[in-house]
Length: 539
Ligand code: C2O
Ligand code: CU
Ligand code: CU
Image (tube, rainbow, N blue to C red; front, side, top):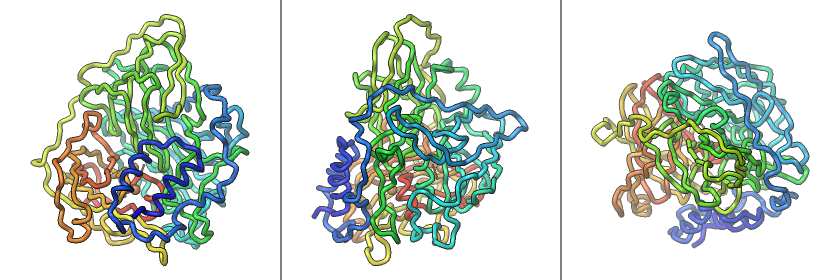
């Protein structure tokens, strides 16, 4: 039996938006055919997916001239000691492509993506985040979603610094939101290792909309060790913030809804266009030398299978939580929402050439390489840093946590849970400060869920196939194959892990730093909104 929702999602949506199926979709198609009957449930339940019949006049990506806009690079803010940065969230407009009318967005500091905060380990950063947003949302708020009930102010915001080890009060906990007219001061201690962090909205029940509206920016934490390696720097370092959007011909953002005005939430959102640093199909004019690309997947739901059109190899030097132990040569990389990849690519042999960065068969941007010979003093050392690997012996406690998906047409169209529990259920993951735990993510669904934990960095121990049906009927975990260690580029420190369907994904973290209540969740923003988020508490 083919699950109706998934069928419509993959076949209907994809056709309507004119996509070439990504690996995710191909993978979903495969999972769909392999799926045992009735796992997700009611195939009459149709209102959980976006209403393709009401799809308004969307931009035809084929009609936009490619590579005519220069890749925007967000302004860099270097925090000065004792002087907090001030960043305003406000409505702004921005042209996302030369041939499109300006788009209404909600941004930090006046543009999307927000300014890149360039922080240094050992020096705390303070930011006053000012909420100057309108009081009405321009995207469809769903009051049936936990935390966004009709008695709550419609527009609320709270900034989370993703990947940062910070005290609870500074983390951007989903319930710490505040309304337009208010501000909040956050202090980021910057005591962790260098990493590609990012900030985004996390307001309970609406952050998928706030993020989609544009509330995203990068935060590069650097340290002496990394700065001493001689990696490409200055103009040889480029941030690439990838995020897909549905855009109408008038330039406006379209966020799909279920067609039910009382419950507009949709389980996933995929755009017809991908923005790179806020531009559609931009061009970066580069020199024939090495570049360090700080790639962030800031999409609500889309995974990217990144590669260069000519198939050239690149080096992965870092993941979510900073440098790998050693560079890994790759030709493509699969990046889930919330994940970061730190890549080095060499254009030295491509003088005068043009190389496209692709998502499978679709170009995202072009690198136009200059003619002139240039000196390149950068290097990529064979050893980047020490990453001691966790083993089972380091683990003092293991938890089995399921990733679940429900369809219940009477009460809720569709629901995703962690450990079978809702956000407001009592905390079950109570962890002693300083202890090391393994969280075994038992994925009962047909989707890959990018699971993110606040506060900590973790390592992926392994992924192991198991019998889902047996687990669902008798709660026994029977493995059907050997444990697979993570590939080399996933062997560093992470804060988002792709939990594959049909697998138990084991991650290990030491819960140190701070006590208090933090969140863990799926980073598919629509899943997170509909209860695929839970608190955990460090005591
Ligand atoms: Cu990137 Cu809880 O977030
Ligand atoms: Cu986070
Ligand atoms: Cu999910």
